Length: 531
Image (cartoon, rainbow, N blue to C red; front, top):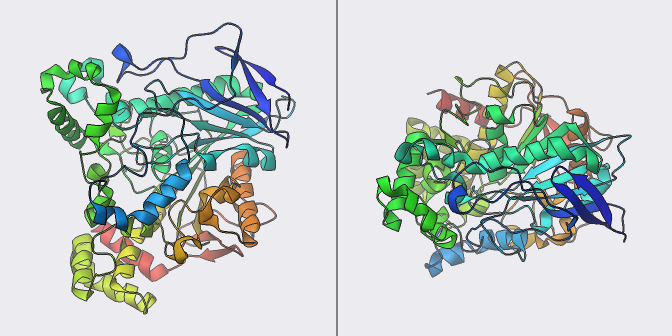
């Protein structure tokens, strides 16, 4: 197909066109070098270039451990065996990645057309990966089907990850490093500025920008709602399986940084020596900081140590978590779509040493650890709801509901309390048939359907219903980007979430709306949260 040339603020770029007519531009620089003296510093726009720069292949990914190695347990055969379904899922997402490079500030654009007579809504995807892994070039994030289906513009981003993007040095090294703990988030803000300034040339509408992400990407999306620098750069947000993962308090982030410095043999006053440490070693040593995924229940539920390098409440770039009652309602006017999957945390729980062997006493102990004196009441309520479930399955349900399902509801309620734009809530129930069906409607299970890329992953299976589910989800997200309302003719009427009705779209073979699903369980979680 013919090449296509677009003028950007840094110079001209050459893209290509798919057989279906979608224009594709890959590896576009949105930021300058972040190596050497620029490490840990806010990125600046790229240096302009002359001539025409090829944007025909993906740019480098951020330095990171491969998903199949990340999160601990790589030297423990038993842990690796337990985590096999989770690692297989991650490997299926990642595919064969481009080379890693610290200078990774690139983005990719897919557009249904570059004419500017009818500007298209823009969907900006923030990848997941616990702030430490991931890339905008993973195969399932290919934006061509979504851009083609909705006549929209899709953008995916690479940014700094792990200690290179989220190492909080402000308390240890003074003013020069005051932004280091949120450098990765500032990369995203810079990318959104690039979208504002350039997307019209790609046929996009800079005044209709949806930021959306799953898991860690959902956390990044919610964090943007609390960043003054991001205000006005996007106009809708979709938070998928990640709302309860909170930003890291500055004192905990400082302790995590001190632990990494200790592993590197660097004393606090000598932080400048970090500039001489190869990126590969920083990533390697960072893997030993915090709690690995397979370490236990606390590792899944306590974000500060499970994700030691994440966005930091630094009082500057992020004054407070956006859902904190004391936070300024920066994002109150932004419509939000929030949801999770029915069996969200089961994939991770499969890696716990107790999975499959937990007995009633162990379940009671876990419930007590999570819910305190209300532990026995949780066990009774969940047993009544799932009388045939094993103790391990009930434990998975506890964690899924606490971290993701209730987390999303709590997030929605707080958003409603700001008396701003509407919130729409969904749950994804379409279970994967892969691995014998053990994962259910798993974490990230909606991604291939939102992007309409389900044929690319064995997790979707070969089912005639796949196309119907993909149509329902992808059109909902495009419509939400366009209108701030996800309703479309392929879905039943979907009302905003309110405290009296609690309308929830259940995406499944036949999608449906349920008002206040599982009210008794919801009220139980609310009571524990209220103290």
